[in-house]
Image (cartoon, rainbow, N blue to C red):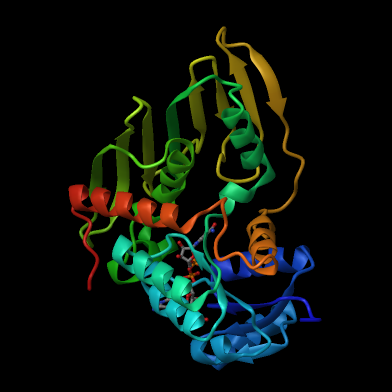
Amino acid sequence: MNRPLGWGIIGTGLIASLQTTDLLKAGLHVAAVGSRKQISADLFGERFAIPNRHGSYEALVQDSDVDIVYVATPHPMHIDNALSAIAAGKHVLVEKAFTINAAEAHSIVNAARDAGVFVMEAMWTRFLPSMVRVMELVRSGMIGTPRVLLADHNQYIPYEKAPRLHELHLGGGALLDLGIYPISFASSLFGKPATITAKAILTDLGADVLTSGIFEYTDGAQAVFQAGFLTPGPNMATIVGSDGYIVLDGVWYKQTGFSRYDRDRQIVERYINTAEGRGMEYQALEVERCVKEGLSESLMMPLAETVTIMETMDEIRRQIGLVYPK
Ligand SMILES: NC(=O)c1ccc[n+]([C@@H]2O[C@H](COP(=O)([O-])OP(=O)(O)OC[C@H]3O[C@@H](n4cnc5c(N)ncnc54)[C@H](OP(=O)(O)O)[C@@H]3O)[C@@H](O)[C@H]2O)c1
């Protein structure tokens, strides 16, 4: 293929705008946008100078200028959007939460494997230079054996500000939108939890607005997370190891600085973030690298781990009584 890979955006909401901004910033080619309404596709296309503008998601996935589809719809729609893109032979980047439950995640992964296309969950935080550096330090033993993760994700988001986040038919609730970040972080540090304990407050609509949990791992490590819409929060994360600890500045899941401490609680390393912008281009560059190398998944966000994370969230939902309509 002599042309650059073409991205096709499904959905024209908040995150579609932010990801498109960063794709263009990185010099990647956004070939098309698809919306449920032609007018929305036209407005989005005009705003970002995207050449192909489709009034349906099906037309977007059938567009021969599109090689990689980015799914930026609410989580309950991810399964249909991803499956139709895969059926059209496209590679797919699916927003987090990947799906509503693990069964749906399995379906996407199986379909992608059968079709031989690349699929990845858009857990953009993992690809940020600051987070890559944190993981390098942990994996090279700079804080000894990691034992504990403490991480929160709180944003004050009342119903009026974002109904999607509170409506169950749109996948509402803090767990899948915010909790996914510390849960995914815990997964990257410790793997699959051996035990899961969670508590939550649900609204009258049935969505969780304050959810906390403890994961225990077979090696004795623990992760403690908290996510909610009721208050703004520090949004800080600390990884505690046998020889020291790393404190990520708020907002830990964005491009940020961090400090590494020794056993005597002295700062021995300070990482200052100098990168500008949101940094969603890093995950897109990883998608392009994998696609160009003929890989069907990224080692930085493996599909089996995405499914395990959905299984963890299924168990939390069971414990807190968060039930999505079928
Ligand atoms: N990575 C991040 O930092 C981040 C941040 C926020 C959200 N997200 C994730 O991105 C996804 C979308 O979130 P968002 O905040 O961008 O949502 P949003 O602003 O409400 O946009 C969602 C878009 O999905 C499309 N859509 C399809 N079916 C829909 C339906 N029944 N109701 C409403 N919209 C529908 C709409 O596009 P059309 O009208 O054009 O079809 C809409 O603009 C979620 O899975 C969320 O978790 C990720």
